[in-house]
Length: 114
Length: 114
Image (cartoon, rainbow over all chains, first blue to last red):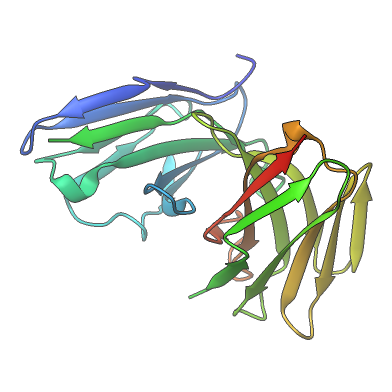
């Protein structure tokens, strides 16, 4: 596609529910990143994929967060047993090269946990 | 890890004036410094970037300067227009990785008054 697509755009979850957030990167982009952006803050790194390999998950806040990219294209970020502090915008970005060449971000999924 | 400080947090200018946003970073090994513009409800958009082997880069009304010794870099916007109003983020890449994991500043809300 023309850009990075994320779905859903908005998600409201009751505390304790599991959620799954989807990212469709730009076709052919090798690198895929997930970032978390709290209200009024800059994005914070969660995890990185090179094709299907998850090479860095050092930013995932807890073991309730899990990400996958099984075929090296679409990625899913899953949050189990959501808590209020998980409320944020989750941004996905992709990049053409394995060496850094500039990200293209999606519009994000705004998650609200009530 | 890397720490990026950005200021000011808000900046208000009249149309036609210049705007300057400054960032400092902590990791002397950081080697890539992009700037992103984020409009309401959208993901960050790359507007300009600079690598550590260059001291200044310009693209039309936008320029970025880098002082590696002092570990700071700045965004300069000249002849500001109302459509420049947005949140601007600086970022730095960790020099120890090959895939460009970014640390972002806290953001600057720029308002350009007609």
